[in-house]
Amino acid sequence: MGTSSDISELDPVYQGSGLRVGIVMSRFNKDICEGLLSACEIELDRLGVARNDVLLVAVPGALEHPLALQKMAQSGKFDALIAIGAVVRGDTYHFEVVSNESSRGILDVQLETGVPIANAILTVDTEEQAHARMAEKGRDAARVAIEMANLLKRL
Image 1: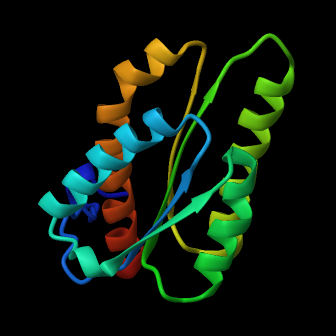
Image 2 (image 1 turned 180 degrees about the horizontal axis):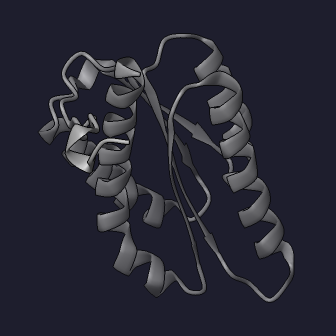
């Protein structure tokens, strides 16, 4: 058994030039989603992803994300996908159902298709929490998508 210095490691690569990215965004909680999208687009730009290499698709809400993402992943047109949305807790159990099933569906699409999906669907108790998180979460989604697309090309 060698020492840790003998282990080769693939460092994260945040170079987006030439990568094709699909974004699926909810229309539900639109102001939060647009904040997430704005931060995401700025970061994709900063990472070198060309505007004409990005396709934005709108869906009604978080439960519709997995199907749209699946179709995009199966198309072979995208190196990475990003899910943008917001689920704000209400007074019923519906919050848990939407949050859990949406996340599970997105994970299933990733594993089934091999196309990385950055999940930027916020699940929060209040709109204020969403507004406080949307810029950072939007930026993170762009970075995750680019890092994972580059990693998968190297494995």
